[in-house]
Length: 527
Image (cartoon, helix red, strand yellow):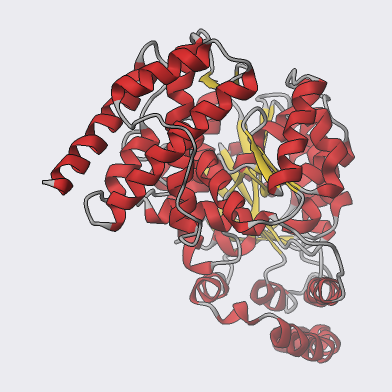
């Protein structure tokens, strides 16, 4: 019988020759492979303890509370294998199963829920989660996984957050995903939780460590797929085919594809992406504006707690629609009860400004990028997010979910504050915006604001918005001037973004307090 080394060499020789050229091409187009985080993964799994048969594999899966499955995104078989494990575990019948996936951002959970309830179809799901733009791998095997979860599971969840392209933030993404899995456990205390995540996240010091901190009592099993070093070592085993190996007590590796198959599939995607020619994608621009303003206000996008920070701001980021998704946006707004007249008014605003933030569905609609207006609407979103999404549309403004709709005067104070922070944010992001000027003669005082509120309360919706915008812009302009003069710190403005406006009398209290401070600062500057 041939020695282990000879078996390994003979079984591997052809693949290794073919792989050399593929790997050179991949390295030329993808420099990320040399990053420390990825090296930690490749160095973590070099050897295994023993071979596994199918029954031992099933026993290990049945004993686990959480199963982390490594995904090689470019390989359709990786997603299909995850679907098969999920279905087999569900058919055992001893406990329900739940699936969490990296492919879908946690911010898009509401979209996933609509599909789960069969309120939207496959194509709308694919478009609204930006699968082709933000992910770009094969849709069919991933959708098969989703339908398997819907057919056999108790729940389906998106786990990832931005930014995917920045490996310096990848540790924060691991901690975020671990917190989301812990939330799933709270919602489904008896379920076996399956998690499909990129293989590099499954090094012991990455997602598994974060999950151990979040859920120390949970029995977690990591199931890797087709790890190179383990595959080449298993090629020296006497058996013609090794299906799985036990790396250690809580880590297994299965083999359902060869290294050459893996890397050829990835090379094909790199080639496909390099030749992709699509229209403008406004989402990265909008997200960058939001991110920049959040950084200015010292907001931690990954904070897991409410208080001086919004909880997981990364999970509240809005959908971004362009001309190509006009029909989808219309359906979304229709389902939220927006009338045709309101829709036409919004589209007119888009026509005038190039974009609009639509709080009814937490979405941007961008037809043409105009920096000044996009910056203002980014600030509007951030203000709503800091107050706690989802918020409810009441025809003239936004109320917190479950809050009784306020009187017109109270809505006026709310809209003044909203317009003030929107104007301030737009000047922070776009300092060349001209200083606000108005023909309105209202003084910036508490009494003047009360008079304006009374006047607006008896006006039609257009006049109401005009007066509230005028007053709010002037207030925001004053706050920005004091910021330039060093009299207002970003942390102070952050408190205004976080201020609750949706209880009885709160908007009036916040608005008049800010006006009082601005007037006091103005008087001190004149003395």
